[in-house]
Image (cartoon, rainbow, N blue to C red; front, top):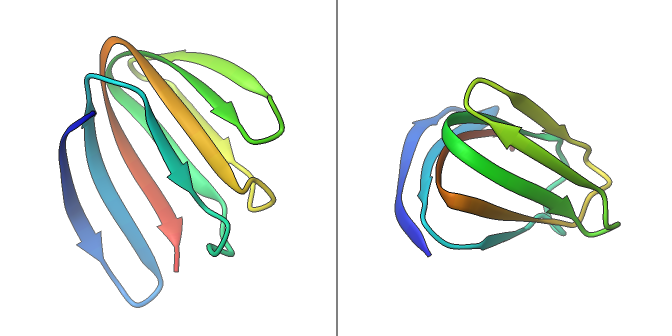
Length: 88
């Protein structure tokens, strides 16, 4: 589950969120016409997109999800904190 999600910044052009995870989370980007950036702030996680591409990330790493991805699943191990940013 998402332990805590806090919207950090909303501008006319972009949004950033701080996401604190202790269970698997799936984000649906089907209606979002933007890339998404995830910065791992704490912990470790596996990020998988709807095409089956996977990447293991740990604190300090950044992942760029292309606009063509319709969804991503983030599985923390055991906990992780991410900053998420995308263009509206």
